[in-house]
Image 1 (cartoon, helix red, strand yellow):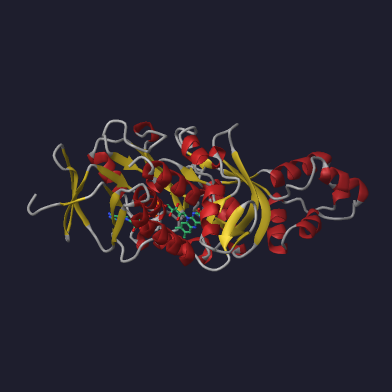
Image 2 (tube, rainbow, N blue to C red; image 1 turned 90 degrees about the horizontal axis):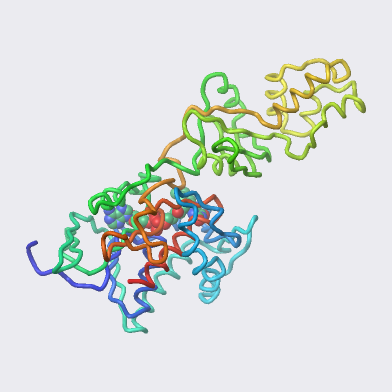
Amino acid sequence: MDGQAQRYDAIILGAGAAGLMAAARAGQRGRRVLVLERADRVGKKILISGGGRCNFTNLGAGPANYLSSNPHFAKSALARYTARDFLGMVERHGIAWHEKTLGQLFCDGSAQQIVDMLLEECARARDFGGEVAIRCGEEIDSVEHGSELGFAVTTQSGHHAAPALVIATGGPSIPKMGASGFAYDLARQFGLKIVEPRPALVPLTLGGEEVLFREISGVSAPVVAMAGPKGKQASFPEAALFTHRGLSGPAILQASSYWRPGETVTVNFLPEEAPGWLTGLKRTTPRLTLRAILRERLPQRLADILADRIGLMSELGNAPDKALAEAEKRLAAWQFTPNGSEGYAKAEVTVGGIATTELSSKTMEARRVSGLYAIGEAVDVTGWLGGYNFQWAWASGVAAGDAL
Ligand code: FDA
């Protein structure tokens, strides 16, 4: 390495949600921290999150709301830094917030307030004898590890060294914002295993006979969407939205994280109806058709397409009970077989990543590489839609920040 390296206590790669949180915590413990960010500004995903208002946490966040090859891994960090802890920080900074639905907390104002808060927390390091230096527009040329300097990071602006290095560069979702698999490449360089990543919280595409559903693009309805292995399906009672490419809306985005190519997504279009409801209606309103009944309960264009595909045209009174029971079953468990997803270009997050088996669940430090840490979306812990992913970023950032 040519030239003198600037020395720090820790270098954090990535000034996103997790990286900034870890920097603030370590700085407030008196550490000298350097944060290297490739983009021209910090926290870009925070700024676009929650429609610009940042769904910064979820009051119900717990391990059950996360996907990971090891469902127990997130427990410790989530328990030690909770949604209430983050909310306390938000309130200390005088940021007005509201609960939108299902425990999802948003800023009343803008996501910029969350970024400003994190930067102020980083600046407060000085009150504790620490320092957080944040440098944007830094392309990482190389990372080396040796006994003398610890970790040596070279960027176009020079050489930096520290005994601790934190990988906080996120996942590859939304490449047009500069997201990439950098975290995985770096982890592999140090011999860490990667759980195969795939796009999550992503719209699904329909082909074949199911393209018919693309004709009702723009229609949405409250449903229960289910995906995942038989017997262990995750189910999400939220809205589904039909798009010109297939399926979206919160219920489908949630299910997409559990879906794998070739598998089906099951949708209950009438979750409010108890078993036997259709044969019950045959007795009370025998003159009605299935189409008319569905139009009373669902948006008309959706009702029509479902009625057409079930193909039960006669009045209920003339339909055999068996056919009605069959129709009921299909409406409660409609099977879509998506032919793909809209990919990383549209995925809010990435499932998979740096294997949790490689990391300490207490500190996020690599078990086999002393001083190397990984946090946030780069790790194989992925939250549901609704503020859970930021809560993981905060909690894992705190876990590492308190250990640096
Ligand atoms: P994050 O992606 O935030 O930060 C990584 C940082 O590393 C970035 O600043 C990046 O530029 C930088 N970087 C990448 N490669 C680098 C390199 N080679 N060198 C240096 N720096 C590099 N979650 C939630 O809980 N509530 C919400 O409302 C939303 N909304 C939302 C909307 C949209 C459109 C998206 C795409 C995502 C969300 N999310 C969300 C998910 C949330 O944004 C995500 O889980 C967190 O930002 C992850 O935090 P990290 O710090 O791990 O990565």
